[in-house]
Length: 134
Image 1 (spheres, rainbow, N blue to C red):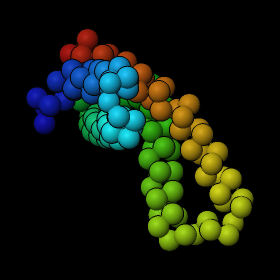
Image 2 (cartoon, one colour):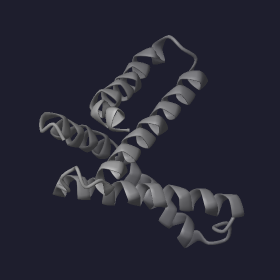
Image 3 (cartoon, rainbow, N blue to C red):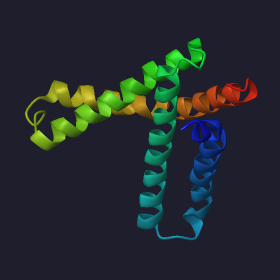
């Protein structure tokens, strides 16, 4: 696990690089295929970054900076909201409730703003850890 955490910054850079590279492929690949690739890569980035940052947040070896605390708070907001959205859509809980539907639309819109910030912030946190040999 420690070896994986030492290489974490490189892993994140590769996943983000693949994500950005897939946007260049939009011109050459069918729209449905590239859309599925981009969505898959986006979730891959989210899982990789959230997992590494949760492990580091719980570990006593890593400094609990304000940046890491803000990342964990915002990323947990996105993850918990996403899981609630999946649960509500499976059980059709928000079928008749317009206010609940509007709430989830606002939550999803906030993800559009928060997600790029979380990606960049996680890269900065990992770079800080790498530079400080943590």
